[in-house]
Amino acid sequence: MTGISPKNGCCAPPRQSRTTAVEQSFLDGGVHLSGVPQAVFVPGGKSLVGTDSPGIRDDGENPLRNTEVKPFRMATTVVTNAQFKSFVDATGFLTEAERFGWSFVFAAQVPANVGGTEGVAKAEWWRRVDGANWQDINGPATKSDTWFPDHPVVHVSWNDATAYARWVGGRLPSEVEWEHAARGGLGDVKFPWGDDEPDDVDFLPCNIWQGRFPTSNTAKDGFLTTAPAEHYAPNGYGLYNMVGNVWEWTSDAYRIKSLKKSVIRRLAEMKGYKLSKGGSFLCHRSYCYRYRIAARSGTSPDSTTTHHGFRVAWPV
Image (cartoon, rainbow, N blue to C red; front, side, top):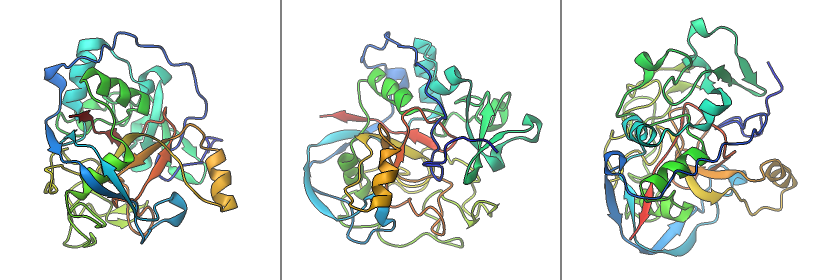
C-alpha cells in the first residue's frame, strides 16, 4: 500500500503527481478518414439533463432540468483500439500513460508475473502497474492477450482524448449533449433502453459487473472486462454502449452545486477535474451505481485506467 491519493478512487484515481506533458503541436484538426468513427445525426431541440430521482445525491445528479441543445453528430461507438492506432500511426502521438511510464489497472486484471504493485488507499483494487498503456493494457507484454481492434481504447487521459478528437475534426461532447444522445429520444428515462434495471441473472442490456464487487464477478454477460465497442442493442439514435463498458470523457469541468460541507471539501480536492459519464464494466448497483444516464463522475484530466475511454462529437 502506498500514499497514492484516493480522492476519486472508486471510478478513476488521479495520478499522485503531475509531470509536465510534452506539447504535441503537430495536431492540425483535419479529418483523417482511416481513423474516423462512424457517426449518426443527433437532432437538436428541447432536451433534459439530470434527474429528480438521484441514485447518488452528492454527485450532483439532481434536479431534472429542461434545456436546449443544437443538433450535432456523434460517433456510434467509443473510439476503438484500431481507430486510435490509426491516429498514433499517422502522428507518432504518445499517450500520457506512455510518457508517465505507468497506469492504473484493476487488480483482477494484473497478471501474476507483474509482481508486486502499488495500491490506492481505500480503493485497493486499483493498482499502479509500470508499463501499462493503451497497447499493453494489463502491463508489459500483455498486448497479445488483451488488445482487440474492435474493443474500446483505454488508458487514455482527457488530454489524449482531446488530441484524438481534434485529429478527426471533432471534439468531446458536453454533458448536455451526452445525456441528450444517451436518452435516444425517450425523454426522462434512467437508461438508454428505458427504466428497466439490469440484473445479475437474465436481463443484461449493458456491460457491467455481476456478482459481489470487487472480489467476485460471474461475468454472466460474457465479459470480465471490456466488450466490443459495437455490442448490445443500440439506443434510439443508433448509439452503442452509452452506459457500461467504459467511462466516457466529456468536455465539461466537474462541478456540483451543493451547500454540503463534505461535498465542498471534496470539490476543493478535485480542482481542474473533468466530467465523465456512462459508468463501466466495473459498475454494480451495490457499489458504484453510475451506469445511469444522469450519473456522473469527476476525474483528473491526466488519469488513465483500464475502464476509461471516450466518444467523439462533431458540430452540424
